Image (cartoon, rainbow over all chains, first blue to last red; front, side, top):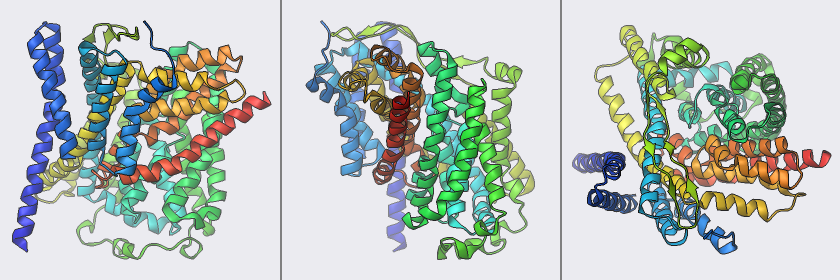
Length: 63
Length: 532
């Protein structure tokens, strides 16, 4: 039983880290997009947008 | 080429909101998942049907991030202050102190879920009153869902003149109207809404059986708070409308507790059994602590908020460093233009979040010096803040993105235009508050709703020969109610009571009850219009 709790705690901790990473990514990407657009780096802007779009799909899957 | 108003286009514009509602209310999804679905829907619908191009969507999302950071500043610091105070024993001590002050559950509900919420709304913003008061309600024995619903509904009447009347001032700024008439009707409508707000707090906490018992104190408190707000608002002091009402409400509320009928346990619904342990004198870890020292974090918050907002030199000094980004003009293929200009300006040191942060630092020092923090307290505090903050923040980020994309692609304006043009002048006062509420529900902000729809409502009132001040008051009063029902705000409330990921269940409860104050605003505006 204590082993199961430990595993559950580890899993929850892992999920929290994953969500925190997703949050940081979703905050930083739009700033990257801002500067990519400002400096007219078209390819970078598209790549950042695609990553952001995919991160939102991942968020829906993660719940 | 312009986008015409048709039922099909209106329904399309409503799709992102509908998807969020379906996810939360039908599938009981959390805010993050529902927000994500809403965001994907908004991107697809705006690109396919509203002529949004890559640049427009990018600008909308970057602007949304600035607004999100503005909100995060408050949420994360409010969570931090709550967990610091909790670690010091403040929440447990309130849980023990309030039942000693009155054992009447109806009065306990009203004191925290309505009066204290109103007072905090006076200076706080974006969900702070709910984030602060919901845990206190949980501490005195209400369930987390009840607590969030009570604090949210108790706040419905207080938003327009709250946060130093930011929403009201914004309405005046965008419409350029003389403040006198709008202040008169806004204070009147919101004063009327305070009655259902108070009654709903009592009913959600204690069931419909408590309704009759709640009527006398709610009527007395609504009257004194409504009159205070009215006098302040109509005499040019609208920035203090909610704060003044909250202070007077708390004073009168405590005076009511001196009446035996509201103090004795046997006259009110019983205290839940699980509060027995909480109510025992000076339980273990809080022995020897003073409730005044334990509450110093929140006392500091109020003092600092007043100092920064009301002492001009302090406010000016704190407001020197501001952060924003400049954006180019963007337009849809159908000609809906968002002008160039700066995004949300974040006042780094004078922001409500900064004030919360100062309160956190000072209270940490006080608690440390007073020996109120156990070894390992800081680690526990940051762990708890992280656990509740991350999930909620993901949901808010997505929801704010939905609102921004809808705004930039003209979807939000089309929704309001559809409502306003399909209704004749006789019934428009019934619909005006719904438009205000819809804008606030989508954006999570009474201020944003007034920015979006203030001019539209003004033009509609002018065309229909209706009283412009009354229609604008109906707009902002509807926005006040709608903003506390918004998913983005519900997520904030849920984050402080351990309901992160269960926002759907809370939304079901809040929206059901929330329709009552909206209906009251609509009926009141309609009757006032009929009476001329």
